Image (cartoon, rainbow, N blue to C red):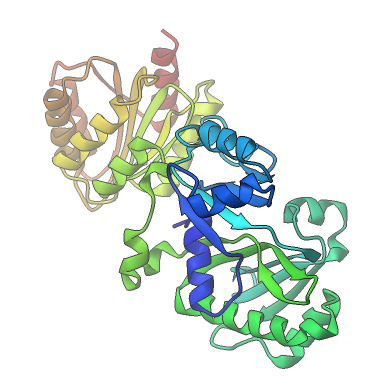
Length: 387
């Protein structure tokens, strides 16, 4: 689960990590800032969305007069900001963070994340702050520094000193940097984060260490321990169908094709989408109804699929393991009748009582095509999608 920048900074502040002074607004510029803009004092205006690349897309600007500030507010609030991370539709801008301008001496990159390959926590940092870490890795990976921390441990003084030397932290800022690393690591553990990224982390001209920007992702599996943070999630930042699926206990990812996919299991979903593409079609989504899907679940899933006007055919690919294929087939027939589906439905069933399940589908006299295999189902779905 991702947080907005202002939410992430509230967490940082609660762990004694310094951040710029700021105001979150959703309509007008506060009078206190308006008066200073009239005197040409500069502020940073930052549109709040769940995506990076805001600066390159015009969502972050340094502004030093009231006219430009009002123009930024007018253009950004209520719009959808498109960045390279959320193409092609972008995400809605509902709030803007206005922050004080900071005098910067040095910009750094600093992050903590889970490294599944080494089964440890990794601190990743670079002297090249303010740019995408992926680009740094491509151009010169020697500028990326790593420290691995075993689960259950904290970074040692030796590790922090090593990072401080590699990042060329000024002597006067050593104490601030050490405190920053320890407090950020504690935040990472206490809040069950999968990623905290500070880019840029800056050293100010008066030798203070300060987080100028922040991105935080929480581990979804641990959200039950952080109800307040869970409740603060901004659902406007995700596709409406994805939000509806989440509320129904389904996993749904919107894509750009014309073939709706209903499956049980992530692996089956990936195989289904691969075969659709291999057969010359494009999946419209990734929808996983889970292993114990009921008729009600299937009905809800159909409704979500059909809310996408681009869907021209639905491919149902279900493995009847926990639930028998005949029960699944009865659920599909019931759901198709309940929803009143007009477009073709291609169904591939496999597992317990599969022949009985196919018989139920064939005798339903509905617009349902029962496929013999996943390859056959994909080919038929692609033909229907192009008819």
